[in-house]
Amino acid sequence: MSSVMLRAFFNGRADIWDETVAEKDVTKLAEMARRLELEPGATLLDVGTGTGVFLPYMLDVIGGDGRVVAVDVADQMLLRAKNKGFKGNISYLYADIMNLPLGGEIFDAVVCYSSFPHFQDKSQALREAYRVVRRSGRLLICHTSSRAHINEIHGQIEIVKHDTIPDTDEMKSMLSAAGFADIVIEDGGDSYLAHARKPQ
Ligand SMILES: C[S@@+](CC[C@H](N)C(=O)[O-])C[C@H]1O[C@@H](n2cnc3c(N)ncnc32)[C@H](O)[C@@H]1O
Picture 1 (tube, rainbow, N blue to C red):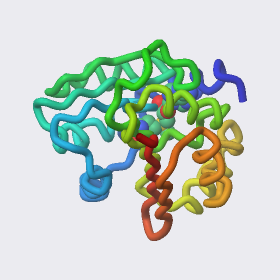
Picture 2 (tube, rainbow, N blue to C red; picture 1 turned 180 degrees about the vertical axis):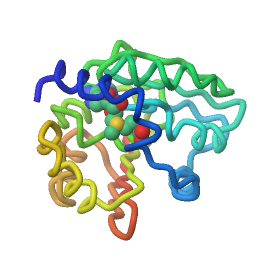
Picture 3 (cartoon, rainbow, N blue to C red; picture 1 turned 135 degrees about the vertical axis):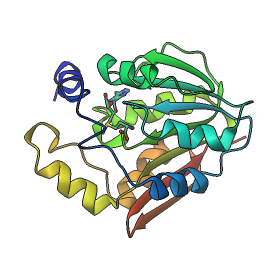
C-alpha cells in the first residue's frame, strides 16, 4: 500500500478512532506503559501517536520533566491528539518515521505503540529509529494484543492485510541489521513487546 493510501485510511477513521478501534482497556494501557521502564524525565519519540491513545500513560511515567515528540503521517489523527490538550511537554510532528526531519541521537527511547505493522519499509523505519535514539537508548515496539491477534485482525481488513508484525526470528534479524543490540521479544497472552538497545 502506498503512503498516500495509508494516510487516507487513517485520516478517514480519525473521527471514530477512539470509539471504535482504539484500545479502551485502561489497565492494559497503564500496564504496558509500566513495562516500558521509561525513566522519569525521559525524552521520547512516540511514533504513530494517532489520536494519542497511549500518550497520557507514557506522560504519567516520565512526569513533568519528561518530553515527548509525537509523530504521525496522518495529520487528522495527530490533530485529534493535539486537541485533547494533554498536560506535559509534547511537540506534535506531522512526519514519516521513514524520513524524520530531526537530528540524530536525541531520544532516550523511541516508542511504537500499535503502529509498527503499518510502516511500509520496516527496515528503513528501524534505521531512522536507530539514528534518532541516543547511545544506550531504547527502541520499544509494543501492542496490547499478541502478535497472532494483531496479524489476524489486520488480515481481515483489505487495506492493511499485509501490515503484520514479523515473526520473532525476522524481527530480531531486522533489529540487529539496523544496529540494535540486547533484543528481547515478549509475545503472548494479550500483549507484544519488543525491546532493543542502541549500543554505547
Ligand atoms: C493503528 S494506528 C494506532 C494509533 C495509536 N498509537 C493508537 O494506539 O490508537 C497507527 C498509526 O500509525 C501511523 N503511521 C503509520 N505509518 C506511519 C509512518 N510511516 N510514520 C509515522 N506514523 C505512521 C498511522 O497514521 C496511525 O495513526
